[in-house]
Image (tube, rainbow, N blue to C red; front, side):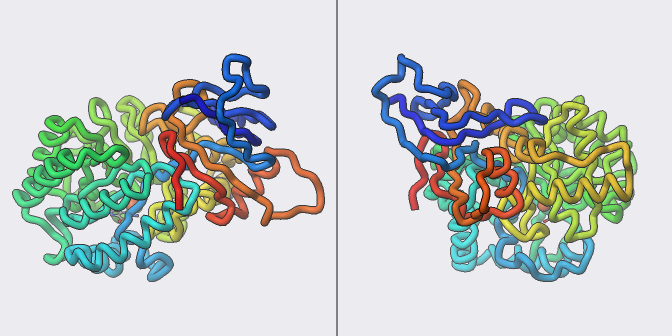
Length: 423
Ligand code: GUN
Ligand code: FE
């Protein structure tokens, strides 16, 4: 059935310019967008129109990098850098997900809040534990969100309580994929998730490539986030030319496997060139990179080179699932980088961060994150009446204000793959 939403419609076709259609119609059939029109075309006369009045309608936000099991300890223990933070906070917390009762409680909080947010799609790290990973996938499917979820692989450099044997990691991953296939989820897909090079032996990485090929699944991991991490990878993989090359040597760095690398804060020119050649997606996580004093990624360069860039909350190194926060941090971090580090890369603009939070990250899922024809119908209706202003504002000003001020309270309705997500 063909239907339409009516309201103040905003979306991106390219990174530097917003498309705005005031009092426009977003026409869609089942799960696919037909188009955006200032007046309803004759051929659509009589279709069901949901009129959202003066509210703003945007594509749903895409969180390209988030750790579900870290949700419970958001905002705690931030005064450390990456490797200490992992040992002290993250690994002890993630080990609790062996206990399915704990996982049930903690994952429910994550899923409920993600559902309330303006996020429609996410690429999610779970833990090494197969059972609780499947539980998380069941919950996300039930919530009506469209996600990719990874059982994490780790067979070295972590405490005994959060480390798998190599064979165990391989077998559990295969068994997880087999079970997930049987579930026939509609919108919840598996994604191969070696935590990062320091957590995975060469033998494991080779076997994960075999699994990736056999099951034809995408890949997510971390790259060039922190100086200590980068030099550790050089020691662990002396044959690699640079960090990203260590993944590439195992065939887990784009090319024929669709891949997200989170962070890319300190990628050198060789790494950037390889990411570009291989079509790797970059998940820019500016709040995380601030909290763990990692640095600021050269996102302006990535955009100028035409690379794939989206935004990630990176909970719990980032404190919130709210993607408006990721957008405002991306702008703010880029301004500090420009002023303090490199005046050649100008700060990011509002249309650019909006693009990254929608179409930029959405491309990882296919035709997602825009309202152009044939895109999947993910939309969020935003009501900004809480953010009152004594003067009239245009749609672009209202959107900019939401990027700085909004949270889940502004989410009035949400559609994922053509279905309205209900409370
Ligand atoms: N690198 C490896 N694991 C992690 C993690 O959980 N969070 C972040 N920010 N970086 C990582
Ligand atoms: Fe992360």
